[in-house]
Image (cartoon, helix red, strand yellow):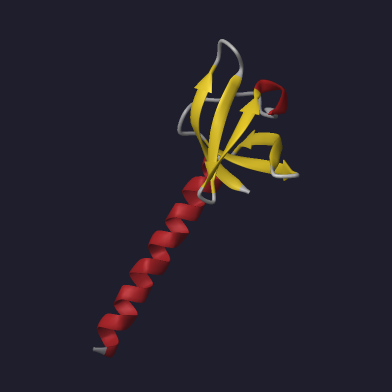
Length: 85
């Protein structure tokens, strides 16, 4: 499940992720990326029994590609609607 870090305290290694309208607590032992966790990072969370058991930082290239695809689809949709009008 994809989410976003909304709080992280490096002193105690604990934080919060928001995903699908809920908040999930995590600690640094669940972090699986070489870059340290930080607020506003987009992450992929693995859940078990409604708790985070694994957390990795999403690749910035993947996020950029997804945004570009969404933008292109929106532009194409707008052009199609305009041509039909």
